[in-house]
Amino acid sequence: MLKNKFAFLLAGLINNYNFIVIFSCAYSLSKINPYINPSLIILSEIVPGFITQILYTKYLYNVPYTYRWIFLFSTQILSSLFLIIQTNIALLFTSIALISINTYLGESSMLSLSTFYDQKEMKFWSMGTGLARLCGTGFYLVMDRWLDVRIIFGINLLIYLIGYSIVLYLLDYRNKIQNINQEKPVALEPLEYKLSEAQENIEAPSVISRSDTCSDTCSSWSHCSFWKKHFEFFGNVQSLTIAYFLSYFLGFAYIPLLVKSDFEYQICQFITGIAIFFGRISGNYIKVERIKLFTLIHLYSLLSIIIFTVSIYMKLELPILLINLMLFITYFINGTAYPIVYNYIYKTYTEDKEWHMGLVGQYTCLFMIIGCLIGYPLQL
Image 1 (cartoon, rainbow, N blue to C red):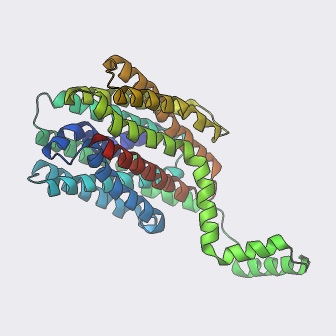
Image 2: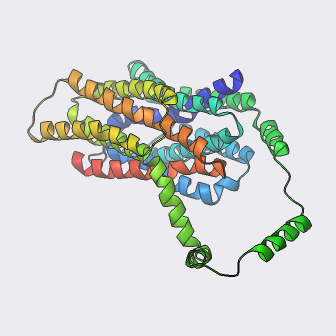
Protein backbone atom coordinates (compact mmCIF):
# COMPACT_ATOMS: atom_id res chain seq x y z
CA MET A 1 0.00 0.00 0.00
CA LEU A 2 1.14 3.53 -0.80
CA LYS A 3 0.66 4.78 2.75
CA ASN A 4 2.87 2.01 4.15
CA LYS A 5 5.62 2.83 1.66
CA PHE A 6 5.49 6.48 2.64
CA ALA A 7 5.43 5.52 6.34
CA PHE A 8 8.61 3.42 6.06
CA LEU A 9 10.29 6.15 4.01
CA LEU A 10 9.41 8.70 6.68
CA ALA A 11 10.40 6.30 9.48
CA GLY A 12 13.89 5.84 8.03
CA LEU A 13 14.24 9.61 7.69
CA ILE A 14 13.01 10.50 11.17
CA ASN A 15 14.79 7.67 12.98
CA ASN A 16 18.27 8.50 11.64
CA TYR A 17 17.92 12.27 11.24
CA ASN A 18 19.26 13.51 14.60
CA PHE A 19 21.93 10.82 14.58
CA ILE A 20 23.24 12.23 11.29
CA VAL A 21 23.12 15.83 12.51
CA ILE A 22 25.65 14.86 15.20
CA PHE A 23 27.92 13.71 12.37
CA SER A 24 27.83 17.16 10.82
CA CYS A 25 28.56 19.04 14.03
CA ALA A 26 31.15 16.53 15.33
CA TYR A 27 34.02 18.63 13.96
CA SER A 28 32.88 21.82 15.72
CA LEU A 29 31.97 19.99 18.95
CA SER A 30 35.45 18.48 19.04
CA LYS A 31 36.96 21.95 19.46
CA ILE A 32 35.75 22.26 23.06
CA ASN A 33 38.57 20.06 24.38
CA PRO A 34 42.00 19.08 22.97
CA TYR A 35 41.39 15.39 23.76
CA ILE A 36 38.07 15.32 21.93
CA ASN A 37 37.96 14.72 18.20
CA PRO A 38 35.23 13.68 15.73
CA SER A 39 36.03 9.98 16.13
CA LEU A 40 35.57 10.16 19.91
CA ILE A 41 32.26 11.98 19.57
CA ILE A 42 30.96 9.49 17.01
CA LEU A 43 32.29 6.63 19.11
CA SER A 44 30.21 7.88 22.04
CA GLU A 45 27.24 7.90 19.68
CA ILE A 46 27.76 4.27 18.70
CA VAL A 47 28.78 2.36 21.87
CA PRO A 48 25.43 2.87 23.70
CA GLY A 49 23.67 1.80 20.51
CA PHE A 50 25.84 -1.31 20.30
CA ILE A 51 24.87 -2.27 23.86
CA THR A 52 21.24 -1.63 22.95
CA GLN A 53 21.53 -3.92 19.91
CA ILE A 54 23.00 -6.72 22.03
CA LEU A 55 20.20 -6.36 24.58
CA TYR A 56 17.64 -6.22 21.79
CA THR A 57 17.89 -9.82 20.63
CA LYS A 58 18.03 -11.04 24.23
CA TYR A 59 15.44 -8.93 26.05
CA LEU A 60 14.17 -5.84 24.23
CA TYR A 61 12.90 -7.98 21.36
CA ASN A 62 10.14 -9.26 23.68
CA VAL A 63 9.00 -5.79 24.79
CA PRO A 64 5.66 -4.83 23.16
CA TYR A 65 6.03 -2.33 20.35
CA THR A 66 3.86 0.28 22.07
CA TYR A 67 6.24 0.49 25.02
CA ARG A 68 9.17 0.82 22.63
CA TRP A 69 7.59 3.83 20.93
CA ILE A 70 6.99 5.47 24.33
CA PHE A 71 10.64 4.92 25.22
CA LEU A 72 11.78 6.37 21.88
CA PHE A 73 9.73 9.52 22.34
CA SER A 74 11.05 9.93 25.90
CA THR A 75 14.73 9.52 25.00
CA GLN A 76 14.34 11.89 22.05
CA ILE A 77 12.85 14.60 24.27
CA LEU A 78 15.55 14.19 26.94
CA SER A 79 18.45 14.15 24.45
CA SER A 80 17.19 17.28 22.69
CA LEU A 81 16.71 19.14 25.99
CA PHE A 82 20.23 18.20 27.12
CA LEU A 83 21.69 19.42 23.83
CA ILE A 84 19.78 22.69 24.10
CA ILE A 85 20.84 23.44 27.69
CA GLN A 86 24.30 21.82 27.51
CA THR A 87 26.62 23.50 30.00
CA ASN A 88 29.43 20.94 30.30
CA ILE A 89 31.02 17.97 28.55
CA ALA A 90 29.21 15.40 30.70
CA LEU A 91 25.80 16.71 29.63
CA LEU A 92 26.89 16.78 26.00
CA PHE A 93 28.00 13.15 25.99
CA THR A 94 24.88 12.09 27.92
CA SER A 95 22.67 13.61 25.24
CA ILE A 96 24.70 11.93 22.49
CA ALA A 97 24.39 8.57 24.28
CA LEU A 98 20.60 8.99 24.45
CA ILE A 99 20.49 9.74 20.73
CA SER A 100 22.47 6.55 20.14
CA ILE A 101 20.08 4.40 22.19
CA ASN A 102 17.10 6.04 20.55
CA THR A 103 18.36 5.54 16.99
CA TYR A 104 19.47 1.94 17.29
CA LEU A 105 16.44 0.73 19.21
CA GLY A 106 14.28 2.51 16.65
CA GLU A 107 16.15 0.87 13.77
CA SER A 108 15.90 -2.66 15.20
CA SER A 109 12.25 -2.20 16.12
CA MET A 110 11.27 -0.85 12.71
CA LEU A 111 13.16 -3.57 10.86
CA SER A 112 11.52 -6.24 13.03
CA LEU A 113 8.15 -4.62 12.46
CA SER A 114 8.76 -4.57 8.70
CA THR A 115 8.45 -8.37 8.62
CA PHE A 116 4.68 -7.95 9.05
CA TYR A 117 4.56 -5.90 5.83
CA ASP A 118 5.32 -6.61 2.19
CA GLN A 119 8.96 -6.53 1.10
CA LYS A 120 8.18 -3.82 -1.46
CA GLU A 121 6.99 -1.62 1.40
CA MET A 122 9.98 -2.45 3.60
CA LYS A 123 12.41 -1.32 0.87
CA PHE A 124 11.37 2.27 1.47
CA TRP A 125 12.95 2.11 4.94
CA SER A 126 16.46 1.99 3.45
CA MET A 127 15.56 4.84 1.10
CA GLY A 128 14.44 6.85 4.12
CA THR A 129 17.71 6.25 5.95
CA GLY A 130 19.58 7.45 2.88
CA LEU A 131 17.34 10.51 2.77
CA ALA A 132 18.15 11.11 6.45
CA ARG A 133 21.86 11.26 5.60
CA LEU A 134 21.15 13.73 2.83
CA CYS A 135 18.71 15.93 4.77
CA GLY A 136 20.61 15.80 8.08
CA THR A 137 23.93 16.92 6.62
CA GLY A 138 22.28 19.39 4.22
CA PHE A 139 20.03 20.95 6.85
CA TYR A 140 22.89 21.48 9.29
CA LEU A 141 25.16 22.84 6.53
CA VAL A 142 22.59 25.52 5.65
CA MET A 143 21.13 26.29 9.08
CA ASP A 144 24.53 26.51 10.80
CA ARG A 145 25.17 29.66 8.78
CA TRP A 146 22.17 31.48 10.27
CA LEU A 147 20.88 29.74 13.41
CA ASP A 148 22.36 28.90 16.79
CA VAL A 149 22.96 25.17 17.25
CA ARG A 150 20.45 25.10 20.19
CA ILE A 151 17.68 26.34 17.90
CA ILE A 152 18.60 23.65 15.37
CA PHE A 153 18.22 20.92 18.00
CA GLY A 154 14.87 22.40 19.06
CA ILE A 155 13.64 22.24 15.46
CA ASN A 156 14.89 18.65 15.23
CA LEU A 157 12.83 17.70 18.28
CA LEU A 158 9.64 19.01 16.70
CA ILE A 159 10.43 17.20 13.44
CA TYR A 160 10.90 13.93 15.33
CA LEU A 161 7.72 14.15 17.45
CA ILE A 162 5.49 15.10 14.53
CA GLY A 163 7.13 12.81 11.98
CA TYR A 164 7.22 9.67 14.13
CA SER A 165 3.59 10.20 15.17
CA ILE A 166 2.59 10.28 11.50
CA VAL A 167 4.58 7.08 10.88
CA LEU A 168 2.83 5.14 13.63
CA TYR A 169 -0.57 6.38 12.51
CA LEU A 170 -0.02 5.37 8.89
CA LEU A 171 1.44 1.94 9.69
CA ASP A 172 -1.48 1.04 12.00
CA TYR A 173 0.83 -1.66 13.36
CA ARG A 174 -1.56 -3.05 16.01
CA ASN A 175 -4.20 -4.10 13.50
CA LYS A 176 -1.53 -5.28 11.09
CA ILE A 177 0.11 -7.61 13.62
CA GLN A 178 -3.26 -8.86 14.80
CA ASN A 179 -4.40 -9.67 11.26
CA ILE A 180 -1.14 -11.45 10.44
CA ASN A 181 -1.34 -13.58 13.59
CA GLN A 182 -4.94 -14.56 12.81
CA GLU A 183 -3.90 -15.69 9.33
CA LYS A 184 -1.18 -18.03 10.65
CA PRO A 185 -2.05 -21.76 10.42
CA VAL A 186 -3.21 -23.34 13.64
CA ALA A 187 -0.79 -25.86 15.17
CA LEU A 188 -1.75 -29.52 15.77
CA GLU A 189 -3.56 -30.35 18.97
CA PRO A 190 -1.30 -31.83 21.70
CA LEU A 191 -2.88 -35.30 21.43
CA GLU A 192 -2.55 -35.42 17.64
CA TYR A 193 1.06 -34.24 17.92
CA LYS A 194 1.91 -36.96 20.45
CA LEU A 195 0.33 -39.68 18.29
CA SER A 196 2.23 -38.56 15.18
CA GLU A 197 5.45 -38.31 17.18
CA ALA A 198 4.93 -41.83 18.58
CA GLN A 199 4.36 -43.20 15.09
CA GLU A 200 7.60 -41.62 13.89
CA ASN A 201 9.48 -43.19 16.81
CA ILE A 202 8.12 -46.65 15.97
CA GLU A 203 9.09 -46.35 12.31
CA ALA A 204 12.52 -44.82 13.02
CA PRO A 205 15.62 -47.10 12.78
CA SER A 206 17.18 -48.15 16.03
CA VAL A 207 20.77 -47.54 14.83
CA ILE A 208 22.13 -44.19 15.96
CA SER A 209 24.66 -42.69 13.58
CA ARG A 210 27.70 -40.66 14.62
CA SER A 211 26.21 -37.52 13.12
CA ASP A 212 23.06 -38.03 15.22
CA THR A 213 25.19 -38.29 18.34
CA CYS A 214 27.07 -35.12 17.45
CA SER A 215 23.81 -33.34 16.82
CA ASP A 216 22.46 -34.41 20.20
CA THR A 217 25.66 -33.28 21.90
CA CYS A 218 25.57 -29.88 20.22
CA SER A 219 21.92 -29.42 21.13
CA SER A 220 22.78 -30.05 24.77
CA TRP A 221 25.48 -27.39 24.55
CA SER A 222 23.44 -24.36 23.61
CA HIS A 223 26.54 -22.25 23.02
CA CYS A 224 27.60 -24.58 20.19
CA SER A 225 24.48 -23.92 18.11
CA PHE A 226 24.49 -20.27 19.23
CA TRP A 227 27.94 -19.53 17.79
CA LYS A 228 27.30 -21.60 14.68
CA LYS A 229 24.08 -19.71 14.06
CA HIS A 230 25.77 -16.34 14.44
CA PHE A 231 28.77 -17.33 12.33
CA GLU A 232 26.54 -18.39 9.44
CA PHE A 233 24.48 -15.21 9.78
CA PHE A 234 27.63 -13.06 9.79
CA GLY A 235 28.62 -14.64 6.47
CA ASN A 236 25.42 -13.24 4.97
CA VAL A 237 25.86 -9.71 6.34
CA GLN A 238 29.63 -9.31 6.07
CA SER A 239 29.43 -6.99 3.05
CA LEU A 240 27.30 -4.60 5.10
CA THR A 241 29.61 -4.73 8.14
CA ILE A 242 32.62 -3.95 5.92
CA ALA A 243 30.66 -1.07 4.39
CA TYR A 244 29.95 0.39 7.84
CA PHE A 245 33.55 -0.04 8.95
CA LEU A 246 34.87 1.76 5.89
CA SER A 247 32.28 4.54 6.20
CA TYR A 248 33.23 5.34 9.78
CA PHE A 249 36.94 4.77 9.32
CA LEU A 250 37.09 7.11 6.32
CA GLY A 251 34.51 9.53 7.67
CA PHE A 252 35.98 10.12 11.08
CA ALA A 253 39.64 9.16 10.74
CA TYR A 254 40.59 10.45 7.30
CA ILE A 255 38.14 13.22 6.36
CA PRO A 256 39.11 15.43 9.37
CA LEU A 257 42.76 14.97 8.35
CA LEU A 258 42.11 15.76 4.68
CA VAL A 259 39.99 18.92 5.09
CA LYS A 260 41.20 22.30 6.32
CA SER A 261 38.14 23.76 8.03
CA ASP A 262 34.80 22.98 9.63
CA PHE A 263 33.03 24.21 6.48
CA GLU A 264 34.96 21.78 4.25
CA TYR A 265 34.20 19.01 6.73
CA GLN A 266 30.47 19.76 6.51
CA ILE A 267 30.67 19.84 2.71
CA CYS A 268 32.30 16.38 2.72
CA GLN A 269 29.59 15.04 5.02
CA PHE A 270 26.91 16.46 2.74
CA ILE A 271 28.49 14.94 -0.38
CA THR A 272 28.80 11.53 1.28
CA GLY A 273 25.17 11.94 2.32
CA ILE A 274 24.16 12.44 -1.32
CA ALA A 275 26.15 9.34 -2.30
CA ILE A 276 24.53 7.17 0.37
CA PHE A 277 21.08 8.46 -0.57
CA PHE A 278 21.47 7.41 -4.22
CA GLY A 279 23.24 4.20 -3.17
CA ARG A 280 20.38 3.10 -0.93
CA ILE A 281 17.86 3.79 -3.66
CA SER A 282 19.88 1.91 -6.29
CA GLY A 283 20.58 -1.01 -3.93
CA ASN A 284 16.88 -1.88 -3.81
CA TYR A 285 16.95 -2.68 -7.51
CA ILE A 286 20.17 -4.72 -7.55
CA LYS A 287 19.59 -8.47 -7.19
CA VAL A 288 22.52 -10.26 -5.58
CA GLU A 289 22.08 -13.98 -4.99
CA ARG A 290 25.71 -14.72 -4.08
CA ILE A 291 25.93 -12.16 -1.33
CA LYS A 292 29.45 -13.09 -0.23
CA LEU A 293 30.94 -12.21 -3.63
CA PHE A 294 29.41 -8.75 -3.33
CA THR A 295 32.02 -8.02 -0.63
CA LEU A 296 34.68 -7.76 -3.35
CA ILE A 297 33.18 -4.46 -4.47
CA HIS A 298 34.74 -2.83 -1.40
CA LEU A 299 38.20 -3.24 -2.92
CA TYR A 300 37.74 0.24 -4.36
CA SER A 301 37.43 1.66 -0.84
CA LEU A 302 40.65 -0.12 0.14
CA LEU A 303 42.38 1.56 -2.79
CA SER A 304 41.05 4.94 -1.65
CA ILE A 305 42.43 4.37 1.85
CA ILE A 306 45.86 3.60 0.41
CA ILE A 307 45.83 6.80 -1.66
CA PHE A 308 44.67 8.91 1.30
CA THR A 309 47.28 7.33 3.60
CA VAL A 310 50.12 8.07 1.20
CA SER A 311 48.98 11.66 0.71
CA ILE A 312 48.72 12.30 4.47
CA TYR A 313 52.02 10.59 5.27
CA MET A 314 53.90 12.46 2.52
CA LYS A 315 51.98 15.69 3.26
CA LEU A 316 50.62 15.93 -0.25
CA GLU A 317 47.58 18.19 -0.54
CA LEU A 318 45.02 16.49 -2.74
CA PRO A 319 42.51 18.79 -4.47
CA ILE A 320 39.31 18.94 -2.43
CA LEU A 321 37.30 18.10 -5.57
CA LEU A 322 39.28 14.89 -6.05
CA ILE A 323 38.80 13.96 -2.38
CA ASN A 324 35.05 14.51 -2.62
CA LEU A 325 34.82 12.55 -5.89
CA MET A 326 36.65 9.56 -4.38
CA LEU A 327 34.49 9.72 -1.26
CA PHE A 328 31.32 9.96 -3.35
CA ILE A 329 32.12 6.70 -5.16
CA THR A 330 33.08 4.94 -1.91
CA TYR A 331 29.92 6.00 -0.08
CA PHE A 332 27.72 5.19 -3.06
CA ILE A 333 29.10 1.63 -2.99
CA ASN A 334 28.58 1.47 0.77
CA GLY A 335 25.06 2.82 0.38
CA THR A 336 24.07 0.01 -1.99
CA ALA A 337 25.17 -2.63 0.55
CA TYR A 338 22.45 -1.63 3.06
CA PRO A 339 19.31 -2.47 1.04
CA ILE A 340 20.97 -5.40 -0.75
CA VAL A 341 21.79 -7.15 2.53
CA TYR A 342 18.46 -6.41 4.21
CA ASN A 343 16.48 -7.54 1.16
CA TYR A 344 18.59 -10.71 1.09
CA ILE A 345 17.93 -11.39 4.79
CA TYR A 346 14.22 -10.70 4.30
CA LYS A 347 14.01 -13.34 1.55
CA THR A 348 16.45 -15.90 2.99
CA TYR A 349 15.25 -16.25 6.59
CA THR A 350 11.70 -17.49 6.48
CA GLU A 351 11.80 -18.61 10.13
CA ASP A 352 12.32 -16.06 12.91
CA LYS A 353 12.50 -13.34 10.27
CA GLU A 354 11.47 -10.67 12.76
CA TRP A 355 14.38 -11.61 15.07
CA HIS A 356 16.95 -11.82 12.27
CA MET A 357 16.04 -8.42 10.83
CA GLY A 358 16.68 -6.87 14.23
CA LEU A 359 19.93 -8.81 14.68
CA VAL A 360 21.95 -7.15 11.88
CA GLY A 361 22.52 -4.01 13.96
CA GLN A 362 24.82 -5.88 16.36
CA TYR A 363 27.33 -6.51 13.61
CA THR A 364 27.13 -3.08 11.99
CA CYS A 365 27.58 -1.37 15.37
CA LEU A 366 30.60 -3.50 16.21
CA PHE A 367 32.39 -2.60 12.98
CA MET A 368 31.45 1.06 13.35
CA ILE A 369 33.11 1.02 16.77
CA ILE A 370 36.24 -0.61 15.33
CA GLY A 371 36.41 2.07 12.64
CA CYS A 372 36.17 4.89 15.20
CA LEU A 373 38.64 3.25 17.60
CA ILE A 374 41.22 3.13 14.82
CA GLY A 375 40.39 6.66 13.77
CA TYR A 376 40.73 8.25 17.21
CA PRO A 377 44.52 7.82 17.70
CA LEU A 378 45.20 8.85 14.08
CA GLN A 379 43.85 12.33 14.84
CA LEU A 380 45.68 12.91 18.13
